[in-house]
Length: 282
Ligand SMILES: [Zn+2]
Image 1: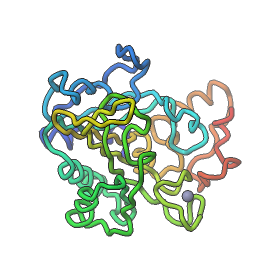
Image 2 (image 1 turned 90 degrees about the vertical axis):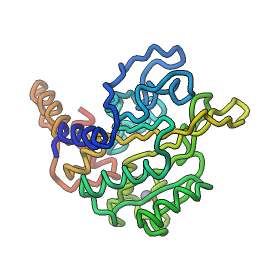
Image 3 (image 1 turned 180 degrees about the vertical axis):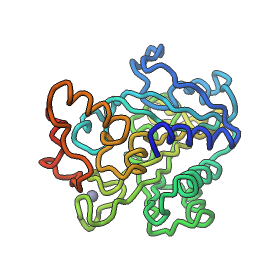
Image 4 (image 1 turned 180 degrees about the horizontal axis):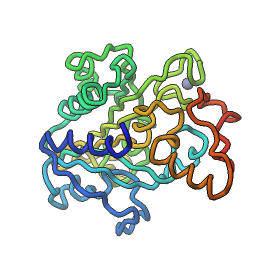
């Protein structure tokens, strides 16, 4: 699938399932607490808090985002970019854990055709309900469901007074022959064996500076799937910069600078820094 086909497919899937398709909010926000839009849910903070009416009970969007919180990973991983697009579906007091998980699985497996045996699931430490949905209803074996704590499966990781809650993630396994090859390598590992594909956040609380959790007026769903990562996987590339749209930009830039656009289509190890494509370094 070409990049534009992926965007159309995602938004079309959720539109068919009763979601209003929303345009991307501007990258520079008018929110006094933050300069850039960094997540698909950002335009809906007030709606999750019950302070504003959401545009519809279910919406979906393709949001332009700037990477801020983990900017240091750009250039060191295969999939982190300063600018990226976030595909997301949102529920404001409508469907919750079960609906979000069913939609995500149906889209990834039935629509995109990603083999289910390559998918691993993470859930928050005490989220028995999500684990049960993944295991008993969806059929993911327990050995591919991993429970992780605040650093991985709570959004956002840092304490803030906006909406927050536990999350469950879908990861793609590139296979044991890739990545760090450590015996305990898993979805929480920083190597490139496991690619986090989709984060389903269950927005349930606001959190005070002392850590006190207050329930939101109605629990909601906020999901985010990294568009560039998804395109990389579907186009069978080793780097998300090698997908059809970005590769055109790189080729054009290289031709202006009279340099070769580096390697593509080769089996490049995504964990060996010395093998990163030459164009990353000019
Ligand atoms: Zn690893």
